Structures are given as structure tokens and as C-alpha cells.
Length: 272
Ligand code: FAD
Ligand code: A2P
Image (spheres, rainbow, N blue to C red):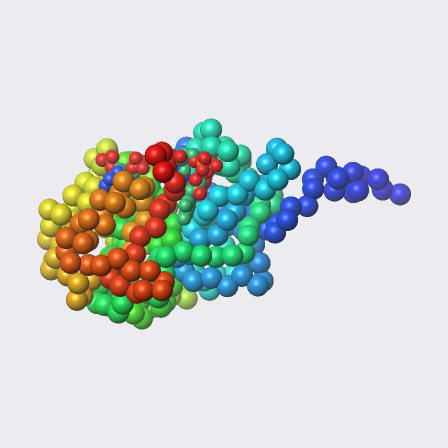
């Protein structure tokens, strides 16, 4: 006779829409990534987000929006997360370990999808902080490279260590047996910092409006005929980038109305 199993099961209630954590990587004291099992039925378009979370103290799911950072062909799902010290979810989520369960509502949505853009020559991914997450998915999607001649990933963080997740991901694509050949030399990575010395510095907005990024990469300034863009950062970042893109003559689009750029919040911050 064994009474231990039922007792353990009672102590650890089975979560609704549960998925199992398979890997956790801590990048800084504010950033971590993790992988979970993928529901068999989950289909999504690279760039979309889902609601994930844990059971709250009141026994109800405590959910937040998270961009899926893995590509749609991956057997597992990857997420890249902030750790907010007093954040209702991430103060606890940052402690997950392989074998733990999280809740994942399998209803992907979002505007950062290739379908929301008109065809073009160059595709710009413009991100700050964890805003790189949807692009971690799109950078690994072969369709991105089938549709565009050049893909430029601009990612800005305060400090060098905060760029590391993106840097390693881009680096790994070269030798990726599945999509390395498709990516070839089409992907251009342009990381910058704003508060620590690095070989390239400055806000995405400043490097676009001053023309520095175009000069550094040896390409012409953005125009509505050739360039398409996807934007993901804080509200202030999104507002400022949108104005700059519109200044280059680009128009904002949506799933139902494909145009030249699309925008999504990386998080809901103060004042919204
Ligand atoms: P919350 O109460 O949700 O947030 C507390 C405060 O922390 C916020 O007011 C804000 O000032 C700050 N904050 C929250 N998230 C971030 C962040 N990502 N970066 C910097 N500051 C932040 N978060 C991720 O870490 N990775 C993602 O891929 C991601 N995708 C998102 C997609 C969408 C469409 C939206 C709307 C949000 C996304 N978020 C993402 C934010 C996420 O939903 C939560 O806000 C975050 O996990 C913190 O949850 P919390 O309960 O700990 O704190
Ligand atoms: P800066 O250091 O000049 O504020 P945060 O950690 O505050 O979310 O910022 C992440 C990165 O985004 C930082 O490098 C920050 O630059 C930059 N950033 C913040 N707000 C904007 C904005 N409105 N436009 C462009 N870049 C921004």
C-alpha cells in the first residue's frame, strides 16, 4: 500500500491548460528565458503572443501576455521574460524549474505577423528589452527570409549583458541545421546600448533619425517602396518609432489591413 502518491497529488493541484517547463536560463538578475512543452493542438504564426501564468494565491489563474519566442516549427515553446521584483506573476515565475508546470492558454493572437505587411525588400525588426521576444520567433522562421532580401534586427538595451539572449540566438542561426542555409547572410544584427560602452551605441530612434544605422550598414534611408518594419518595446518607444517611420513615409498596418509597418507593446507600463 502506498498513501504518498495521492497525498502528493492533493498537495500539487493539476493546473488547467498545464504545460511542463523543460529548460530555464537566467541571463541577468532581470532577465530569463524558459522552454515548455507545446500543446499538440497549438498552431501559431511567428510573432504572436499567448497568455501564460501560474495559479494565484486565490486559486485562480494569474495570467499575463507573452510573445512566443520560438518559431512555429519548434516542438517546444520558448519565452523570454523580465523579472519584476514585486510583479504579481514574474516575482514567482522567475523561480520555475524544469519539471514545474505553468498555465498556457492556447489562443495565439497579435499584430507582429508577416501577413500584416505588404511585400517589400528589407524587413526591420525594432526592439528594446524583452521586445526582442517576437523577433526571436520571426528570425527563426524560414518564411521571413523567403519574403525579404534583407532582415535587420535593431535591438537596444541599457547594458551589454541585456543583449546576450539576442546575441546568442543570432549567432546560433549561422550553424542551425534547419534554417542556417535559408538565413545565409540575409540577417543583419545591429545591437546597441545606451548606458554602457559598446561598439555601437544609441537609441533605435536616434540611430534611425540621424541616419547612422543606414550609413553603418551601407544602405539607403528607409522608404515606403522597399522597407517594412515591426516594432516592439515600451509604449514611449513605440510612439517615438512610429513617428519616425511615418516620417519616412511608411503607413501602419494590421492583420485586416496589411501596410508597411506594425507595432506591438512589449509590456503594459505606467500610465496606460
Ligand atoms: P505586471 O504587474 O504585469 O507589471 C509590473 C510593471 O513592470 C509594469 O507596469 C511595467 O512597468 C513593468 N514591466 C512589465 N513587463 C515588462 C517587460 N517585459 N519589460 C520591462 N518592464 C516590464 N513580458 C515579457 O517579459 N516577455 C514577453 O514576451 C512579453 N510579451 C508581452 C506581449 C504583450 C502583447 C503584452 C501586452 C505584454 C507582454 N509582456 C511580456 C509583459 C507581461 O505581460 C507582464 O507584464 C510581465 O510578465 C510582468 O508581469 P508581472 O505580473 O510580474 O508584473
Ligand atoms: P535610455 O537608456 O536612453 O533610456 P528601459 O530599460 O527603460 O525599458 O529601456 C530599454 C532601452 O530602451 C534603453 O536602452 C532605453 O534608452 C531605450 N528607450 C527607452 N525609451 C525609449 C524611447 N522612447 N525611444 C527610444 N528608445 C527608448
